[in-house]
Image 1 (cartoon, one colour):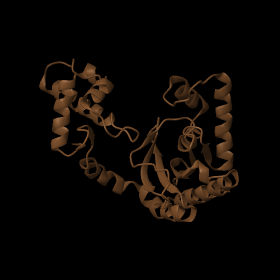
Image 2 (cartoon, one colour):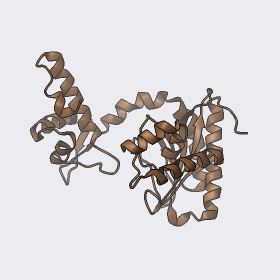
Image 3 (spheres, rainbow, N blue to C red):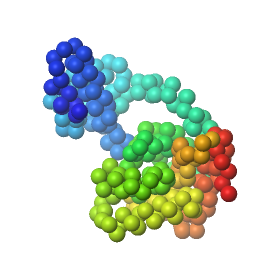
Image 4 (cartoon, helix red, strand yellow):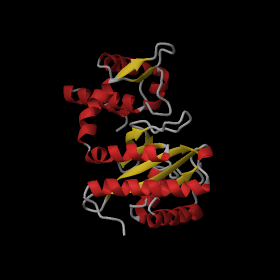
Length: 267
C-alpha cells in the first residue's frame, strides 16, 4: 500500500490511525544522505500526498524534533530526535559494538574513512563510521543507504545470495544497474564470485567517478555474512598498487570483527 492509497482506508479510527503512521513514515523516508534538505513540494511529489497533508505531518514531526527547518532555505531536514530514537537500537547492535575499535584502527592505519555496513535484503546501510583525518575525504553518513550494483558493500552482500535472487534484484531494478543486459548480468555474476574468492570487493570509480570503495564481509558464529567493513577514499589517492594494500587491510579488519563475533577464521 502506498501512502496515497492508505488515505482510502475505511473510515474507522484504526484505519485512519494506520494511514497517518504510514504517511509519516513515508515522509521521513523521503530524506536521504544525497538530498538531506527537502521542501514541502519536493516531499509531496515523492510520497504521493497533497501538500497540505505533508505540511500537517511535518508540523507534527517538527514538534517531536524528528524534523527541523533550515534557517536559510526554510526547507526541512531530519532532526536530532531521530538519533535519540535510533540510539537504543544502535547501542544493542552486536556487530556495531564489535566493530567500533577495529574501524578506528583501520581508519588510523589507512588514513581513509572506515565504516560498517549491514544489509536489509535490498540495500546496504551504514550503521557506524570513522571519518578520515584528511581534509579531502569521502564519508558514509550514518543511515546512508546504497542500492547501486557497483557499490562495494552491495557486491559483498549480493555475493552471498543465490544466483536466482541476484538476477531478480537486478532485473527488477531493486538493485540499480543501468544498461543491464544478459551479457553484463553474466559478467556481474562472475565478478561476485571473484569477490568471494579474493575476500573483498572493489568499486573503483564505477558508481562515482571520484570515489573508491572497498568492502569485505563480516561473519557471525553461524558463518553467515552479517555485515561488511568498508573503506571509502578519494580516487586520486588510490593507485592500483595501493588498492591492493587497502583491500588487504579491509579484509583483515573484517576478519577481526568476525573473530569477535565468534565467526570462522579465513583459511
